Every structure is written in structure tokens, then in C-alpha cells.
Image 1 (cartoon, helix red, strand yellow):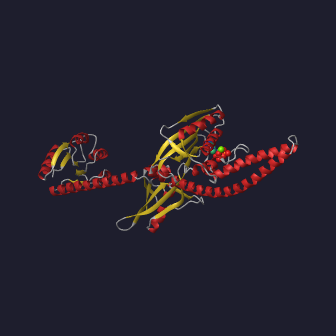
Image 2 (cartoon, protein in one colour):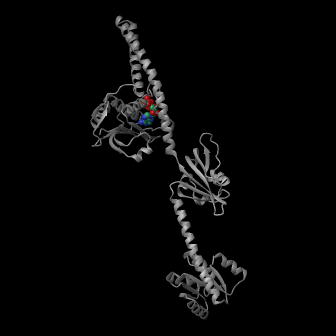
Length: 498
Ligand code: ADP
Ligand code: MG
């Protein structure tokens, strides 16, 4: 083993030399001697010893304690004071610099050796402890979930960066505060504050999970749905000496659950609508039939013939509506053919473009590799028309409309994130606008038949409901991203032909 390398700071040359001999005879290497604080600091940078023996009375402006204090902030080298002073004031000052030993002159060689050995050993242990602590901190900081620890009284002692991000509290501000102030938890349904599970976990010595309905209110007032779990920190003696809370943002999962709930609701609505539409259609057939007969028997200039013409017009509109309802409810038979996706989009787009107001700039982007898809072309035309109509309605004062085709390969991993879409190859139709966008409230009802935010006479609320019906019949999927004032992007996935 290498000899420990010792540095001596001693203002009396003779004492220093004699100490050096003593140390050599005890098996240490003396790597440097200095008589002032300043000289010590300079030489330590070059020599990097394992230990410093420091006299307190020195030459120059710094005494031993002041020198030790400066060294402590720059280097991790243990210091032992060798001094003739043992008054209270000196001892108190020395303590603050956390020395590894304090030897009073005159001392025995034996005491010197024990003190040095203990200091070196303690320093090694300290280093290992520090490394372990750093490792734990680094691990806790790298965890992808929020982690907060508290002391036994529920005061925050640590939080990792994910916890900082979610709560909007900085660790430096949060440490020492009550956990309930930093992690303000409420029940989504009742709006009531929830006790932090850390407190219950510490009281019961058990892990407490809170998975449902918990909302975190961040420092800036933002609300984030979370799952969390509190656990007691138990020492080797079995005593609880703190608590740890692990929590994660579950916004995405709750949204997916909401979507699933929504699509179940739509299915039920669809069945209801289909039943009504079916009967209604039969009645309309009679109305249209008898009104036509009656009109045909009347001379054209009769006022009643005119009225019957209105009846027929209105019935025609009602029939279109019922067809839309039936399409939404997936009751109409579709007739899919293998169709070149890009060509079809182009053909429909060429018909649509003339009716788009001039203040909207339009762009069409075709991906080269989309190929053929099995589609009912007239239904697909309805779909694209509804989407373009909605986009244009959202841009009353102009904007940009992009119609795009794309090919997508959905991987398993992606399927977990987007509910209900099996892995595979898809042809995508994407309609993007820079219009008004939608609030969460509007988004929640989008696909419901008759849901519209447009004035009476302008919107039927059947556009997206119909689109959903069409997409489902083609075993496709429709997703919509939208933010108020930023615009909307609708993506429709059709299974590609193998
Ligand atoms: P309608 O267009 O007859 O209102 P839809 O089912 O097509 O019925 O659309 C329902 C509602 O969804 C609209 O009233 C509108 O509030 C909203 N919406 C649909 N598409 C968009 C869009 N591109 N931008 C903003 N809002 C939209
Ligand atoms: Mg519409």
C-alpha cells in the first residue's frame, strides 16, 4: 500500500522538521511544509496530500482555522489541528471547520499516529457515504416519476426534477415546508382536499396507493390528474423516520379512458338514432309518395300544388338527414372498391376547391407511396366534404387549409397510446386548418349527432357523427387535435390493402 501523504503547516521551522522526522519514522510521507496559511493553500494545489496537520498560530494574515476553512470549501482533504491552544473560543471556532482530529501539544508519537489513522479511516468512510448519497440522489432524480420525501413531521426534505416540474415548486423553496402545501391534492369529483398519503403511510407503516380521481393543483394553479403512492421510510430499527411519495401525471390515460367512455356512449346513441331513423324513413317514404300523387293530380297553377312542392322539398331534406343518421349509425350498406387513394382525394378536392372562399389559402400534399385502399367512394366523398366544410367554417376570416395523404405504419408501442387502433399499415387522410379550434367542452361532444356550435340553419351537428360512422364502417379510426385559436387537425386512418 502507498504511504499516506501528509502536509505540515507549522510556523516554527524546527518544530516542523522534528514533526517531519516523527512522521517519516511512523511510516508517512511528508509531501510539503508551509509556515503560513497562504503558502499552505498554494502548496496544497500542487501536492494534493491525503491529510493536513495544521498549527493554529501561523505567520501571515490567516491563522490555522481560517486557512482550514478556506481549504474545506475547495478541497476534500481531512485536517487535524496540532496546537497548544485549548481555550473554549479556539475550540468553538475550530469545530465549525469540521476537523478530523485535534491534538494538543506536546503530544506522544502514539497519539499522533492514532489520530492520523482514525482521520484517514473516517475520511474514507465519509467519502463512501457521500458517493452513496450522490448515487441515491442521482437515481431519485433520474426516475421518470415525481418523487418527494419528507421527515417524520411531513416536512419536505427532497424532491426530484419531475416533482418540481409537476408541482411547479423548486426543491429549494419546498424543503422544510409541509407536504400538503407543496402537494395540494384534491378529489376530482368532490373538489375536496385529500390528505397526503405520506401522512397515512407514516401513521400506519403501510404503503398507501391513491389511483382514482386524484388531482394535483400545481403552484401556478394548473390541475394535473395524478396517480400516487405514499410509503413510510423505515430505518434498521424498524422506526419510521420519514415518508416518500411517488406520483405520475396520468392526463393521457384519463383522456383515453374518457374517449373509451365517449365511444361507448356514441355506440348506444347510434343504435337509438338508427332505430328512429329507420321508422322515420318509412314514414317519409309515405309522405313523399302521397304528396307526389296529390301534387300530380292538381293543376300546376293551383296554390296547393305550390304548397305540396314545399312539402316535397322539406321531405327531401329530411330524407337526406335520415340517410346521414343511418350512415352515422352504420346501418347503411357500404360498397367498398379498391381505389387509388391519392387519385380519389384529388378528384374530390377538384370539385370542392371552387366553393372555398378566397380568403382561405389551400394546399394539398400527396404522399407518393399511399397506394390503393378499399373504399366506398361516395361515402369517402361525404367524409372529406364534411371535414373541409368544418375547416372552412372554422376560418370565417381566412386562414390556411391543408389536405394531406400519408402512409403510416403503426407499431405495437404506439397502439398502447392510442386506444383501439391495431398495429399495421394505414393510409391517412389529414385535414388541417388554422381556424378557431375547439375547447375541451366542444371536443367532448364532437361526434354526438346533432351537436353543433353553429347558428340554427348553418349547422346540423351531423357532419362529424356521419364521418365517424363512415370511418367505422371502413374499419378505420379518426383522431382530432385542436386548441382554441390555434386550429384543428383531423387524422383519419384507413387500413391499407396488403
Ligand atoms: P356542424 O358542422 O353541423 O356543426 P359537425 O358534426 O360537423 O356539425 O361539427 C360539430 C361541431 O364541431 C361544430 O359545430 C364545431 O363546433 C366543431 N368543429 C368541427 N370541426 C371543426 C374545426 N375544424 N374547427 C373548429 N371546430 C370544429
Ligand atoms: Mg360540419
